[in-house]
Image 1 (cartoon, rainbow, N blue to C red):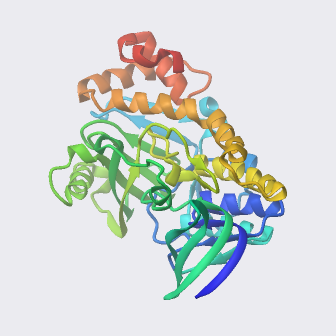
Image 2 (image 1 turned 30 degrees about the vertical axis):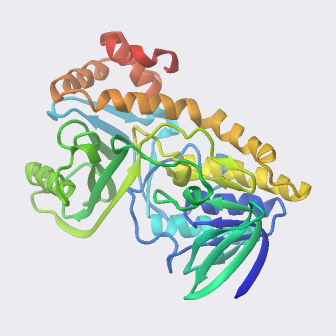
Image 3 (image 1 turned 90 degrees about the horizontal axis):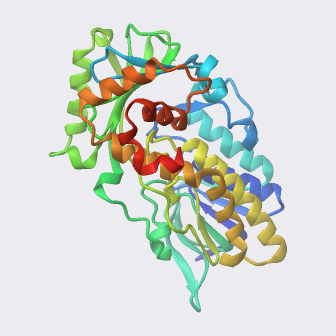
Length: 397
């Protein structure tokens, strides 16, 4: 069996994995990043919308190759369609921004990792952790059909929603059915819509989740929805929800599909711990997806940057103990934890509300003048009219 040796092995070449590999390599670590698929970024399981605010903070330059469209903002639409809140740049600043092409976006992040010095191996799937005397010392893998050992000071689980690395290590990443959203999306062309705004539709059109439109060009968009797993009674029902919404909306009357994708996302509260001796989790594998939006790219990139910097320090001290990796734990929690908890609690409340109440909430918020719109300020606006809905987590607003 072939054996490779490195300081850090990153399992998964999505945004979180590439960001971890990049920043660790920039700090001098010898990094191998493995990806089970033959192509980074494909298949796509994402609406492909991101804000522009965080890119510069994590060292990502905007590249026309992956930028599908700049948008002016977003609209949150009530179940009836009669009311909406507009999140444009006058209110949201640079929190609105881009619809990307994930195939090119993910490749660009992996390219950055490679330029920093990380080695990339495609068609290489981790199969188990290597344990010696109770210590994690790497991963067993299959690369292009051949068995492979990758020995490393630290294993990074960046293997997404279905992460196995965390389970192998004994970290509890299990999910309640109420914390899983099942999604279905078409790329539709020949549609008549406003391509300058993304759209999020609340209510029973997508029970426990929401429906969305992410513009790709003047008459093409990613159109999809996510439904709570607890609301589905049979296989394929999420597609039926999407088909019904498309059939009911005149903007889609002449639409034709170019692509269809399905997947699931976690919408759970933060994990108690994502580190242990010689191992850490990052991004979707660490359950860092925003519970109210289902978005995970920005959080994964932030966490990957923190993880990579801490790993570079660990290499210099030759110490990958949980005590050393705690700096990463502290960094990501300082940046993300309160928001993840607040948004999970808001999600739990929102999924319990009937369409009539969501209509009233949307109407009420649409009449409030806000200097800046975030989940926090929206909840604060709700508190002004319906304080009972946010009483349980008022201290997080």
